[in-house]
Length: 213
Image (cartoon, rainbow, N blue to C red; front, side):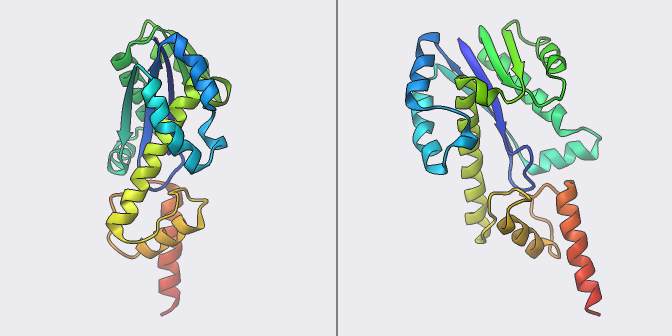
């Protein structure tokens, strides 16, 4: 089995970090290309949704690791960074899928170091590279699965809170407006409160409030 591993939501301030691993028989890899599977960032939300079920229909196995905001904040409070959480997720996927070969989108600047770390839990032939989702269709498939699942979770958050939250990234004006609206309230569990982008918005909002007096 050939496996691709990628994540979605690493840079987000709202919503979970989702890591997806998808495994395929080698004779199905060419079918991914025919479907138009590629890096999820190159596709529209509608295109990703259309490919989601097709990818899962072709894969022989898959495993998802979803890391919620509260878990991220808890680990940061204990001096653990996001890389550590992601590497743990990658290891979990490799152990669950037990592939012959795995292609991984590196979260470390030093891809060789990540490969060495993952080899501690897997005997698979490991290909660990930056932007692997753009280079290998099987990683593109994983990126689509991760992105669709994360987007669905963000939509669930919107429905639960009955307010528009945007994409969950600090570059999204809708997300910023939501965070500003929450800055003086009790923090929502769907926000990464340890993120510097969130802290800056809270500080700015509180300063604005004080300046009115």
